[in-house]
Length: 130
Image (cartoon, rainbow, N blue to C red; front, side, top):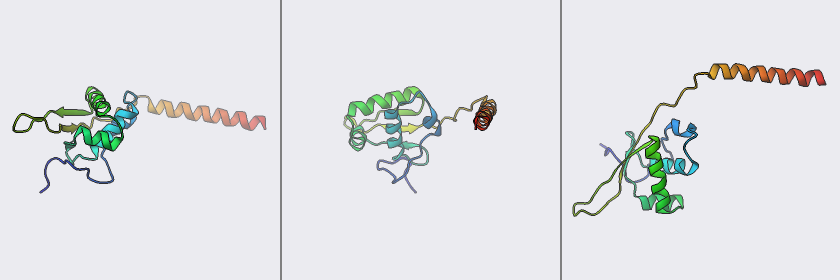
């Protein structure tokens, strides 16, 4: 079978948490880093791409990638496990991408109805002016 994690990108797609796409707290830079990490993930959302590799692929510094990873951890989209080589040296981190539920807007129906009313009023105002 396949290993439970990936070190190489899977190809031309990424399974990005839907909640992240709509989360107004997440910056464009953090979303790019998350999307890049997701290209390495298997079906369980785990992978271990190196910081240097991510930085090179995104065209940013290693520090910039690390900064965005910290933000993603704080926002609850990523869990990082630091790994060490057998002799005590460092190797790439192990990442678990989290897929939180996308928040539902409690008043979505009211917003749609308000939008329809505004649209109808705008149409009536335009029609009567003609």
